Image 1 (cartoon, rainbow, N blue to C red):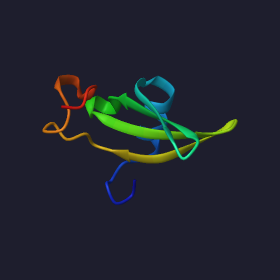
Image 2 (tube, rainbow, N blue to C red; image 1 turned 90 degrees about the vertical axis):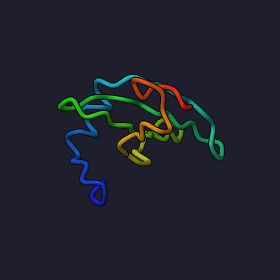
Image 3 (spheres, one colour; image 1 turned 120 degrees about the vertical axis):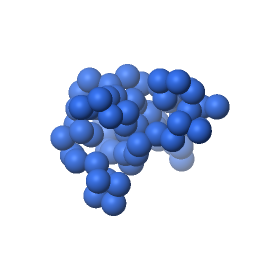
Length: 75
C-alpha cells in the first residue's frame, strides 16, 4: 500500500463500504475482491479469509485496460 501511495484510511473505507466483486479459493482460503471509491478514487482491496480471521492481501488502483466500466468485471 505504501508503494502505491494508498493510505490505510482508503483501504478501511473500501472494507467498510465497498462491494464484493469476486470471490475465489486460494490454497484453501477464501479471497474476496472488493471495490470502493474513497474520495472518488476507484480502489480494489483483496481480503483473505483464513478461518475466522480476515487479512488485507493487497490494495491497488484498477487498470482501465483490464477492467470494464465501473472496474467491476475483468475484460
